[in-house]
Length: 122
Image 1 (spheres, helix red, strand yellow):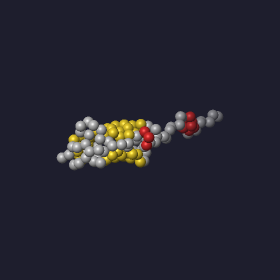
Image 2 (cartoon, helix red, strand yellow):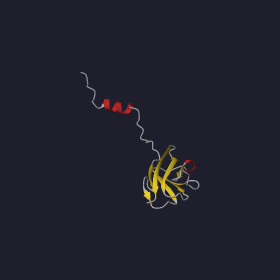
Image 3 (cartoon, helix red, strand yellow):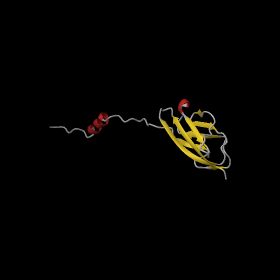
Image 4 (cartoon, one colour):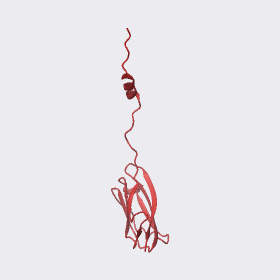
């Protein structure tokens, strides 16, 4: 008399022979929000621009540049990084459109970059 093999053996073999799935998600530091807000209009030129990201940043490899309405750079000095936040002081640039460009390296060693604008004036 021949015994039938149990039905549970095949799923068990598949489970043990299948390649392991990595639970590790690859993440990057993406811009979460900024002050002044992306695309926003403010009454007067801010003294600084601050950006918050979704991950902590590496200080030595993260930067922010800001150009004013005349196309000249108005960022004053090196960007300051603290955790997932980066700030840069600004010189006065008058009314008009400001362009913010950023490039950051997150602690997971991935680099991201981007840009946005905000308006100054009535």
